[in-house]
Image 1 (cartoon, rainbow, N blue to C red):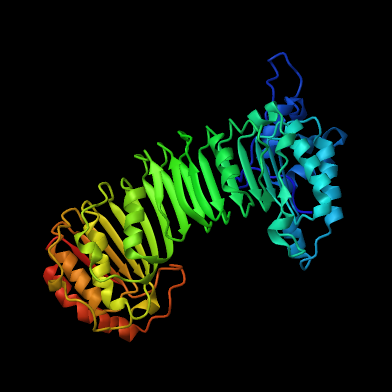
Image 2 (tube, one colour):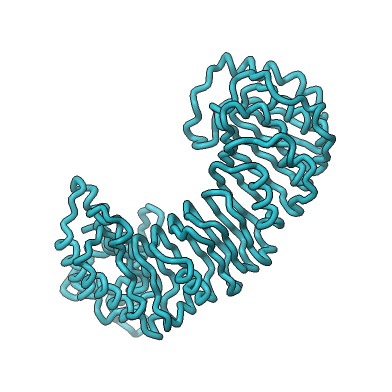
Length: 478
């Protein structure tokens, strides 16, 4: 069984502190002992120490034998133990260990309870008891990761979260809930989670109706994360979530996403291109969107409908094919977007349309100040000589653009023509950076680049760029 006590991390520093002593003339004459402090203060102190250090305090004296049970944060990890033991998990030993520790904490306040292990059907009794312990301990942060069943039956064996065990007091105490590999089916009379601030669901089995009803009851929700929760339907939360600030939806089979979140500041989405409807999200500052197998027209419609007021956008596109000229005359635009980071995976055979793609997106962001374009290295061949010329593109206005950064630069005609087109229309640009390394997937491990090819690529573009570059601007060739 892994460490079962967790706390906030502290810097690894060795600090010597002079022991406190009472002045000889203060009339006291008694030394102060740590165990004389109130239990809640001791619990706070112990929670700041690493788990193994807290347990070691039990050998200090008989008075400290069970002092570690005052720690309000319990963490049990049977999955990591199984990995260390060659993939074999001793379920009964893990269960016995959890039960023993919880028994020592019974009747005490436990702020944070996290249990992670590979659950089997016959262990429902123990899991329910752990939920009952959390309820009686007034737990505020509850995390259950029951991993993937080993019998291969997947979602059919998901543990059903026992909402019926939650009473009015425990529902009001719960502020953070993390659930993985469970089934969510709240009863019709379920009153909801009125004080829940953070909800994280991973590979949870549920229905559209059950999830929507549950979310509508979380009126104080601030952070919501859905990962691989497949509804195969729309997700429409009609109840305003006025406190929601962070929304993440990753690899979920959802056909439409609709939220009323006036204070939403960050939105993360990874999956198929679907319609977004984030009502009244006027404070949305940052969005990271990844569309797989998308079509440019559908991408534009989804983003302009759902995120019209976004300020900083990271957009990763794995396009299935590129239209010819649909977006060049699109009348709608992002009215607040200042920073655009593009990560492009373009199909082989479509790279001659890169100029069209980039200009189409740029025309929709008239106030852009910083542009990053990260190409996938294999999508663009070195010195490719196909594609449109910038003279075939209508004039544009990039009056606010100050910084341009391009990676996986291959001196292909489409890349060079785009850079020249931008510089001809961006009088305020200050910095242009070109990098021949691929940075799309991992900037720490760029692909191997032939120095000769890089040198030739820079030679091709250096002269034309310097000719177009404003006198105050700088060009960096990496």
